[in-house]
Amino acid sequence: MNSSKMRVYHRYLGFFLAGIMAIYAVSGIVMIFRNTDFLKKEKIKTSMLPVETPLEKVGNALRVRDFKITKTEGDLVYFQNGTYNTRTGEATLKVKELPTVLEKLTNMHKATTKSPLFVLNIFFGLSLLFFVVSAFWMFMPSSDIFKKGLYFTLAGIVLALIMVLV
Image 1 (tube, rainbow, N blue to C red):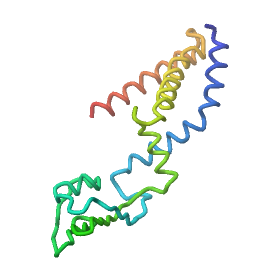
Image 2: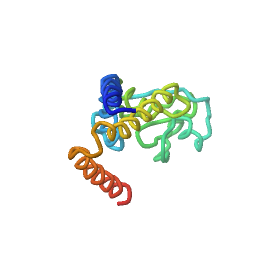
Image 3: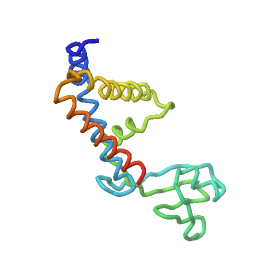
Image 4: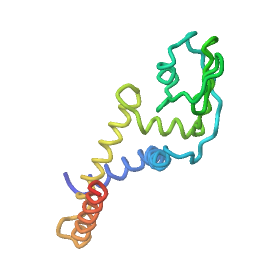
């Protein structure tokens, strides 16, 4: 394949994917802060569990990590950020969530095979791989730009290895 055709494919695929690349960039940056309260708003969620759910299963039912009961008063069981009424089955939980749009973007970024979006993630990953490979067809191998590009490629590989290994 000649250099000019590869440039055309590279250019138009780049334009086509510009929006999704911006979305992945934003969601990737937001995901770095997922263990913090950055951009999150506190919300109160109420759930109804089956009456008299065993206390050891309440955490799993509510999807609360490291569920630990802090105290019990009558029918009311207290745990970090919430309560569970053993008589009524009502559970109240304080959660911190991203705004809806950012939540949807990060869910798209984290899509697994259980999500219909995983096909988009595979397409996007393959497109990025195409960008990597097609970049080497943009300039003639004998040109100075290509040779300098190889130095930048080597520097990028070294940086990536440092980031992975450290």
